[in-house]
Length: 454
Image 1 (tube, rainbow, N blue to C red):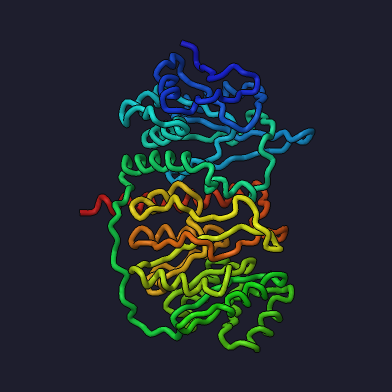
Image 2 (tube, rainbow, N blue to C red; image 1 turned 90 degrees about the vertical axis):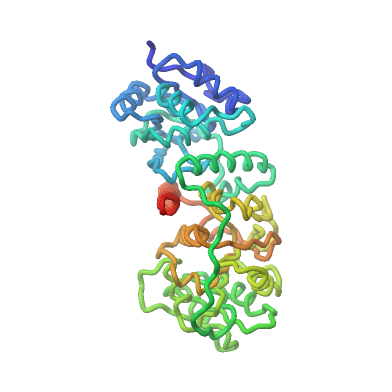
């Protein structure tokens, strides 16, 4: 028997239209008569390194992998650069997981997975590969080769900050609905699915100085912090609130700017932590566990501003509608001068009460601004990181409690050259992706344990 079938013999290695449909993909796997299928993925033309396929086959044989993928090099014009990937883990269930431009699929593992877990549904238009790899991952290893085995010609040259909102583009709504169905079936398959049943938010056993606190962690944002703080102090509400700014030892004039505003308005609580090792999550903990914090803690990033004077009131009103442990609203992407940027409104309408906390394991974020019932938040705190800390606590809260949603924009998210997410280096993007996959791995295991409990 030949060792490898190549899905396409086209020189550009681009999948034909409709290839990722359930019907076509199922037929490909069923008709496979070689040990492995080499599957090209969208992303650019590929030039193999010497003995690349032999190396992938060897790794597959030695590891018993269901899927093997490899690091590669990117060619962008005359420039060639290394493109390492991240290792696959149980929480790598996002449909955006980067396998590069090639994967090697084991015929034996694929056919066994489809026999055990069911065929790829015929009505799947986009997710044939996604459905198969999740079914494969339930029983077979997915192995990365940390060696550059091919060179890919770059097609998508956008910066990371431009790509990260693709999944909430309204034009991809049908795609997202299909991917949600596939990941929900996977979570049911592995015992990590949660029914829409929620714990009651506990009554507070303590008194709070104000009803709500707006929390702003900041370090070296002298260009934007005054706008952010003034947008919070301009809020109109029929309850007492304050603004807690955790100034993480700024050195660019941010501290002096905050002192000037605090001298004008006593509602601004300017905290400078004693510790010097805090990330954004650690700064949030400084605010949340301080005696200044109100019953509800509402987020604002130091780059951004509230859309109008009623944002805080709208968020707290949502808490009053139901016993939510957390409320997440919607925001609009703008440039530094507040001109709208595509895709514009980020409202995460993929969230549903019935399935939101399951689908949250597929996507990389839940939206903003985020607000918390501090009675619940103080039970968990946030991890002391500067990326993914909000995602981590949202997953943890959603395991037990219901999250309320506001789909109207209440927040202007400014994307500008100094914004930390505007263009991440590959090593940083990989580290962030791996961390969020790890958070999903942890959450999946916790949900599996809960579902096994008597």
